[in-house]
Length: 253
Length: 304
Image (cartoon, rainbow over all chains, first blue to last red; front, side, top):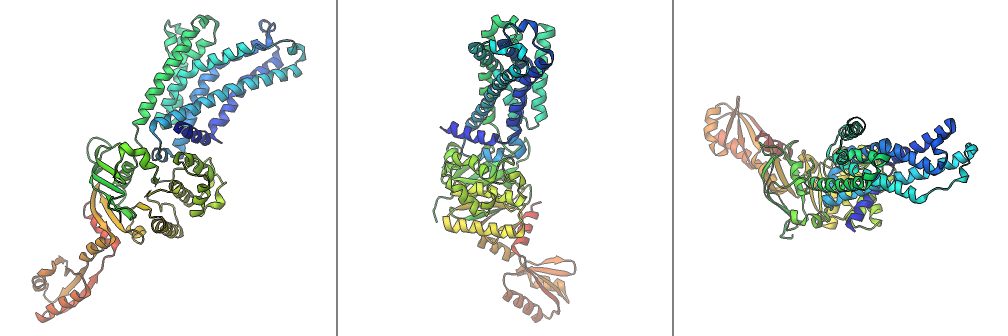
């Protein structure tokens, strides 16, 4: 009950913030790029047999590699900045809430925005498909059926694989006042993940949290998918607990 | 008056880093239903003490009791009865005044009607739907006070609440605090670096400097200290003889004059008579009355 009350307060604080606007804008990116790409260059041949589901599969690659990790890094930074920019930590610490309650509520708020982002992304992808059906009738998109089960699987996979990053970035963002530090550290760690996968082909890459969303969307890592998701969830739990403990011991000057 | 004080600290100490204490051996005693002025120059340790009282800093040394309860094991239940404003207003600029209050309404478990009530108390009922980013500093300060009043607190802790208020705002705030104290029996702990700002409303005073308590007591007790510090400036035909004659009045040499301590106007007449009787010609006899502010400055500056 107490957690729900704190969560409600966090949700209200998110109103009219850059974090909320950014969630909408980031969700628009891939559907818009796909729409423009298909409008100008048409559908790639290998995708033309099952264009609807291919659309979502290709989208998931863009999400896993670029959009989702970067979105989570920036979202965590923007959410923590709500308190830092308004200088409101004092009031929060002087209110009758435990540190663990405040931290958990903030984390849940971030997770809800992450889910909203995925929901918006899927909605906008569907909208882009509907628009393509009208603007590029030659694709005959109306003939094909969308595999809703596969779509759900793609989304659950994306969400589970980014949980580790969300937990780590959330802790870093709450820990450091300067947003450049949290965003910068996150981007460097994400670039390192790309380097590990593309250049080093490191055997234990699946133990590095920032590689997990990237690995989760590529064919060659599909046999390891369960392990990737479990690793991500385990990291998320560990860093959430560490963050909670650290936050509870925090003092405000 | 209730025998259990609203706040009692015992040998409270805190240091931010290894080395010097920011505050040391602070024994604060804030009686229930009092208005306690916590005074000290900037950097004297007021905010650190208040932050400890609100659990914003970990307890390193000493003990804090609020409403007779040990603070740390009872932090949540105590904070439900405490309203606070520490230094600058803690408000969300992108939210309206009402939304800012709503953020904490459920946390404190108060009814929705209370939002309009507290906005009315601080005279901001017309600005409820305006985003706080567009507020003046004075309006923000008033909204922060409204936020502190939201839980109908038994204890109100205000750190430099007059910052950013114009003279009218300061007078209004004084009236409001007196009303809350008299009307609702609310205990108010208000810090300031200016005695003149709070002396018209406080019942008790604590003076802190360089992290040490220099004085604590009622306003009347501070006035006694002040009276003890009244000085009479004297110049006579033989200051050395006058110095000897006035030994009882603890004279001090001050260039060509003497300074003696006196308690009332009658003593000035007695001093003059004593000098005259002993054949001294009195060229200067000027009382230097300290007001409370000067007493406060003397108390705090003597420690620097």
